[in-house]
Image 1: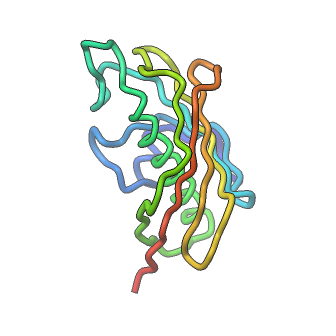
Image 2 (image 1 turned 90 degrees about the horizontal axis):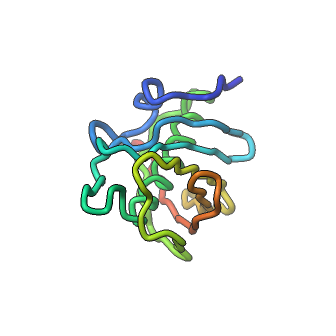
Image 3 (image 1 turned 120 degrees about the vertical axis):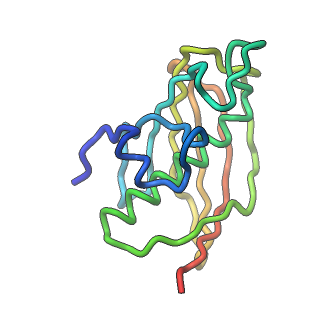
Length: 149
């Protein structure tokens, strides 16, 4: 049974991202059997991608939030099922749309991602995002998992 939320101090052990590149703050929902997950991140001026001139982050940073949310799901599944850790690589990104040019400091970005396809060791995920509860975009990511030797 996964205890939610999973906060940043625990998540840091489940993702390969470290230091300032670690962006998501918490996992608020996760179903490892259905392969879906929800993360939350509050935009802060300490974010690696924060731009003082726009008092926020550019919308394209949401792509990285999507990728890290998917990576967190994989890390949770690996931990829960005691599986070996494998490398993952993004093969393609498609249908990415963002309705806001900037996510302002203090706003909460919520990413929901679910696996929608699998062929061998290639997985497709669809992700959507909201900003302060309002729909703000999404897209599709295809990931290659490289098995450890």
